[in-house]
Each structure stands twice: as C-alpha cells, then as structure tokens.
Length: 33
Image 1 (tube, rainbow, N blue to C red):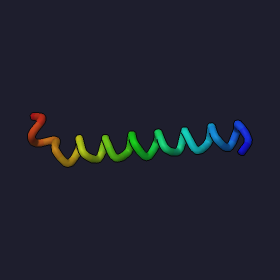
Image 2: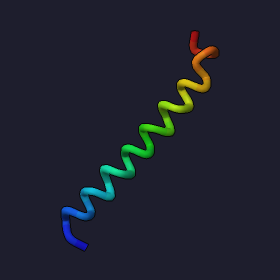
Image 3: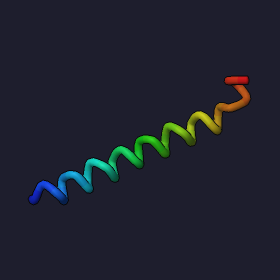
Image 4: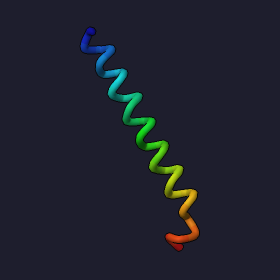
C-alpha cells in the first residue's frame, strides 16, 4: 500500500470514530444536561 492510501484509511477511520462518539453524546444528551 502507498502512504497516501494509508493516510486516507486513517482519516476515514478517525471520521467514523468521531461520528460514532458524537452520536453517543447526542443520544445521551439529556443525561449530560
């Protein structure tokens, strides 16, 4: 694999992780208030 494709995969993985974390925060928003 080239470095660019590795970088893209890492960025996509981070985006998925951030999205799932944000979703959990939004779903549990009432508990945070």
